[in-house]
Length: 359
Image (spheres, rainbow, N blue to C red):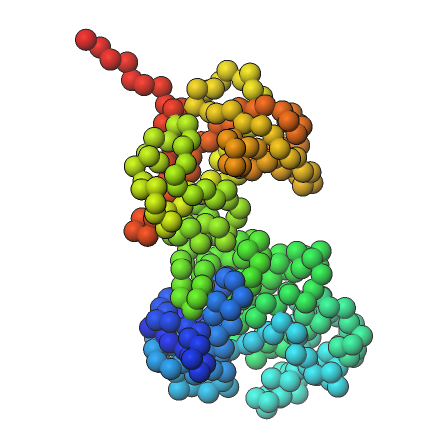
C-alpha cells in the first residue's frame, strides 16, 4: 500500500498533537516513526488506523482518500504494545479471530492459521492460552493475528517495548525477515533509535507534532536536518558557539551571542592519539583524559581540551588504552554546525597540506 498524508492536523482540546504534517511512504517499505514521548507518533498511527479522526488534512491509501473509511474497511493490521490478545482464547482462536469475523470457511481458516503458526515458530502451541506463553511468544501471536486477514498495511505501536532487551534484539531481526517475506507496507512507532536504525528502510523523525526529517537511517545519521535530529540519532558532542578548535577557522565567523547556533561532533569523528604522535599533530590539539569507561566493544574516553570544554570519543579495545590524567593529541576530522537557516559540515582544514606556490 502506498500512503500519502497531506497537511494533517490533530488537537485534543487545547493540545495540538499533530501540526501541518505531510509525508509519503512507498509500498512495501518498513518505516519507523521515531521521536521523544509526546511528540505525536502514536497520534499519527491512530489516525492512519482510523482510531482517531484528523481535524483537517487528508490521508490517501493507494491514491484514494481514506479519511471517511471505517477501521474495518482500511485493510490494516494493528499490533499493540501490550499484545491485546484475548485471554480466554487459545493461540489458534486468537490468530483465527479476524478470519472468523470475515466469515471465511473453516478449511481456509485452518490452512491460514497453520501457515502462520509455522512462520511464527509457534507450532505445537496452538492449544495454549496467552498466559502460558513467554512475552516473545505472545508478541508473535499478536503479529500472526494481525497478518491473518492479509492486510495491506501493518501498524505497530512500540511492539517490543514490553519484552526484555535480549529477546527484543532477536525479534528485530525476526521482524525484518517477516516484512521481507510478506512485502507488506509497515509502520512502527518506537522511541528506541537503535531499533529504528537496525530494521527500518525509512525513518520519520517526529517532534512536537511535526516531521523533522524523513530519510534512510544512513542519510539521517550522516546528513541530519537539524541539531535535534543529530542529537536524537546517534551520539554527539554538543558545543556552543563561541568555540575555538584547531583546523576550523570558519567557527570564528559565527556571532558569539547567538544561542541558536550549535556545533556537534560525532565521537567517531575524533581520533585520540598519544601526546607525542607526529602524524598530523599540527591539525590536532592537546587534551587531558579525564575518564575512561569500558563499553564491551570499545572504550569510552572523556577528554578535557580546555578548562570547562570536554568531548568524548571511542577507542577500539585492541588499541592503546589511555588512563585518566594522560596527555593526548586530539584530532577532530570534521564537525557539523547548525543554525536556524542552514546545516554545514566542516572538514579539518589543517589536515590539508597547502598547495605549493610557484613564482
